[in-house]
Image (tube, rainbow, N blue to C red; front, side):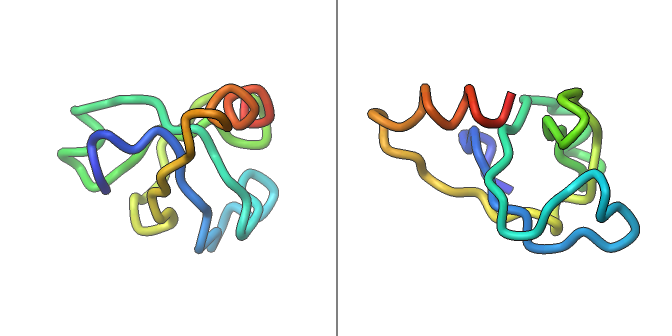
Amino acid sequence: MQKSARFAICVRNAGVPASLELRKVYRLVADAAAASQGLVRVVDESGEDYLYPDNFFVPIEVPKAAVRAFAKRSA
């Protein structure tokens, strides 16, 4: 997963379908310790940030004009 990515699309949710919706954009929270373990910190459906396997997500580039809208939707 790219360190600079701030948003990602969920592509897997095995074992956590209530927490993650497939094909939904999620906001990422920087966590170097988690990244070193193959995990990513994501603000999920609960509105809280939790760790998930990084292969559950594909990082995306969000246009600057849309960052604010995505951050509100994902928060």
